[in-house]
Length: 194
Image 1: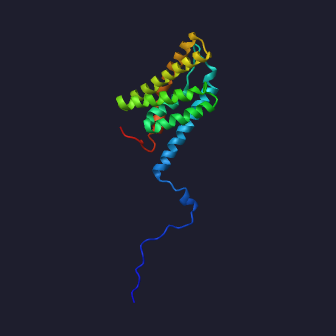
Image 2: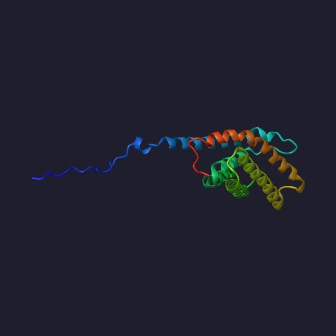
Image 3: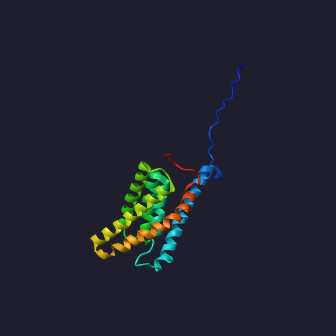
């Protein structure tokens, strides 16, 4: 009588336990922590901008902290991840009530993606290139706001200096802000190589 050899194959169990459902690897936990810290940083920047800095105007202008954070994070994350990130965050920024209008979604998305593409194509990944790319994108964003405001009759032609001062103040804030955002961006490693 021949005895059958037991198979090494065991079918998956049909019951799902809670620990198995929420099991994550260490890399997944690190990346979730990174994105959670990005979200908290943007909420903090938006809160500081709306509650504190919006009360102070120097020569008719103030910083634009939320846009600084969005553009820095977009350029740091690269074009693959940054494109989706800037689209989602610019939409949430508009719905936060702090954005000037729905056109900020298109402005932030197109300018952020273009800045990231240009930085990746022609510049090495350094602190200077990232801050310069995000700062140039912020300047173009402020000029875009001015042009749209002029077209819609929301601003006057002589207010261009306040838009440029906002860009200049935001450039000054981007330099120390880069250190914080870059540290958060290094959690879990980079998702793309150059």
